[in-house]
Length: 70
Image (cartoon, rainbow, N blue to C red):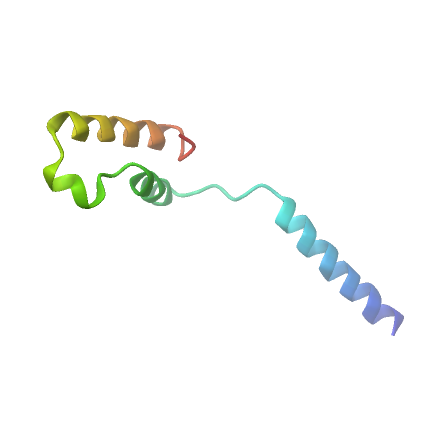
């Protein structure tokens, strides 16, 4: 009985440690998807001006360079 309690405590402690550890590195595709979701024109893309398209493209590129942090 004592070993079962110790094992349950160990499993719970392991879960807490994993949740506190830093997130795993993201792949390039995941980063691009995150940045696209942050910096796209959405349904207004077809009516956006050239300046808006360039602005969003620059924001997307900066987001990818910073690995999704900007």
